[in-house]
Image (cartoon, rainbow, N blue to C red; front, side, top):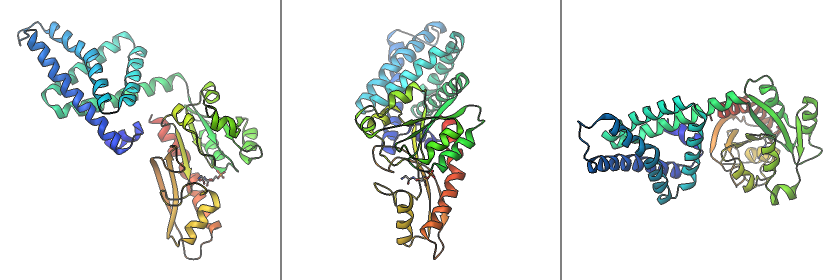
Length: 333
Ligand code: GAR
């Protein structure tokens, strides 16, 4: 469950550990402070229940948030938790008043249990975060579908598989094809499939906002790289945090990096005498083929296999796995 949460938040192991520490310390500190305040106010077990609840509600709604951001700041995790707070507030605003109050009350229940044990405070915060995310997700997908932009520089066989897979999907749409090459085969696919396309140029991509403005205007939620050969600029990564993924035709971290694409990868794998190769689907960060792995699948290499034959085996893996992995990822977030 922790592994899933780490993937959902798209953070590395160290940041995940720091985030758990922030939750743990905040839970314990809030519980301690609530005890101090109720003690200072002279509360006893005989105190009218409504007063006790009001103080705890106040601590949860205001005190907890303030402590969370303070501890997050001390641990260098302010940006993550600020996003978290904003989503939580938005979520509270989306729900009806009644359900918001009932959720508050159940959160108070969690808080009271957490007070009895510092460790249970961590797990209840984690499950609260998980259910908050899944509530928000189902509300959003009910409102409108998730739009994908597929970035490709070449033939676009993966793009075609993605389009086919999501053609009649109830909540996920292949909305836009983006290419840096006006002559790329993938643009012909876009024309045939009547999908909007965007040809990007180097200047705007690397010096402007990476076309983030155009993509946001088209309501794009996820960017799917499928044989896209330019490095993704930081501006675009920041505009779509945790929402850009790539497929690479080898088992990363081997055979990745600048210049490692298409047949160059397969030639290198064969030249190294590897016994197997495969595919890696991963989040995109500022380095080529470097972000956190999401999925890998392997295929054997027989003695005498040529790079061309290996390319076919790897392509078959890509076509089989990329669309369902995208679906799983997009549906779970
Ligand atoms: C795919 O094999 C993909 O893994 C690779 O380009 C090919 C595109 O094929 N991507 C890279 O090498 C990225 N480093 P397609 O145009 O037929 O989908």
